[in-house]
Image: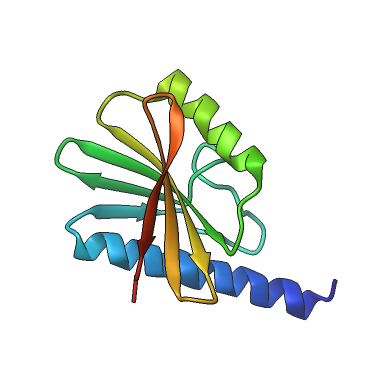
Length: 121
């Protein structure tokens, strides 16, 4: 894979994460994003791109583009079961290029639930 392709993929990922963060900010959430650098690309707890806070709710969000490996779902499930509390939201937002929407999945009550699609412009 060429450096140009990797660079464009990383840039696209950053743009999609920023789009998700702005969408949450419009809903009144305070957002903390992971700062990715050339030499460090570590997510929060190795799993999350965004932390969203609004009153008593804390959201832990992984942002993906077009698809999400099953391993990510299982890793977040393990983390949520170990460290989560009833006011935490664990979500995976998958940006779909074809319709310019996020497909949202939320871990709740011990299992994953499909929430739906939301247009984040």
